[in-house]
Image: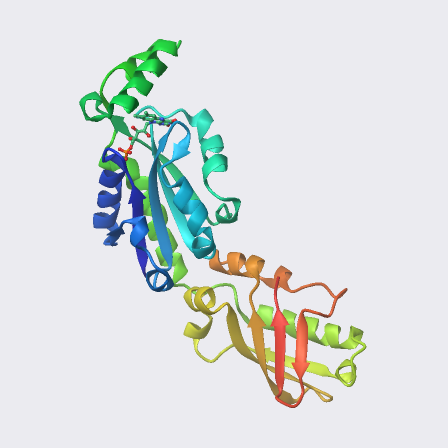
Length: 290
Ligand SMILES: Cc1cc2nc3c(=O)[nH]c(=O)nc-3n(C[C@H](O)[C@H](O)[C@H](O)COP(=O)(O)O)c2cc1C
């Protein structure tokens, strides 16, 4: 599976973490401005590193401009902050900087301690820190703000590396699509036909649903790329006609499937019948999951 590391850094702390991550996971480390649709199409996940200045991520604008390109990708953020991070500010930093569409349950975010070396800072940045030190009442924080401080260490990324590796392992495994799900779908299709007012479909039965022949055709990766699975259904007046069943994945189903969770509750309720369609001439049945 393919992943890339993107980062933005002013004085090198985030770049250092990005390089360690890229080396350890053997992933290319890329300037965010260099990404294009072709590169993104080939990648399954992105690690996005950015430092924070006065509450703003360096990549705040970039994330806003590119959110549509990232919406369906697995994202790991590493946010590099003060050498002695103030956990109470993290929630606000996330809410203020990462577009809501990218804050999905599958998005992972870690904060990593950074550094400042006064002689390397621009005059303005140096002044900002000194001003903060002057107004800081906590003596420990005051001390940290007043002098060089470097907390950038390889061990800080151990947890993140493990999370990415575990994702990569599970991603290639099969998700929860098994005989139980096929039986459930068979029942729901039969129920939907029975409740429908459409002729002649309301007299149709469903006598079975079969998974694709090859497991690769419904692996998590395939579903993430294609957003659908093509299966076989036995339906018709006697439930014996072979139909191509296309199961289309909506946002909820995609998210659950990616996490290896059961997608039975993504089959819409009986109240509406706009989630399925039958083309009798072409022997095709389409089901749109939530
Ligand atoms: C002027 C200035 C403002 C900063 N503002 C914040 C802040 O609001 N919150 C925070 O956690 N860290 C803040 N930091 C700490 C930086 O995020 C930290 O130094 C980081 O390591 C910089 O990474 P970079 O070299 O990759 O840009 C600030 C640092 C400077 C110099």
